[in-house]
Length: 138
Image (cartoon, rainbow, N blue to C red):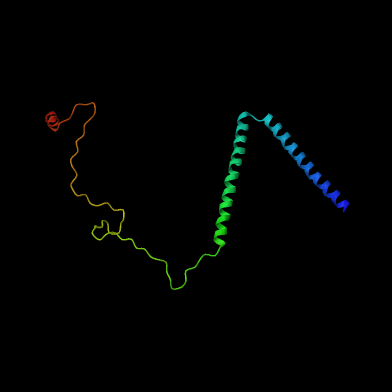
């Protein structure tokens, strides 16, 4: 068993060493590329990294919510015994109101009076009277 423990320890040390080598390689590569890129390219790269970093928590939240819904669907739903139906509620308009449009719920009621003649005033100009206009063109 002494050999087995020794192998497990050396295997763990090898994994740590490989991880440190990979991390050092990634940092060296990032520094080398960072020195050669322009400011605009670095800004685009930083924006992409920040976007991915912001998307990770959102995607984890979506996964958690979808799993919770799946668990709720997997639970058996209480069934209604045969012969019993859920209550039915019917909402009807009062009988005294007229219906406009015969089945069109969004129809407007007809106008009750004829439209009135409108008068317009031009701001900053002289008022225009019907008599003055008639005299001018007569």
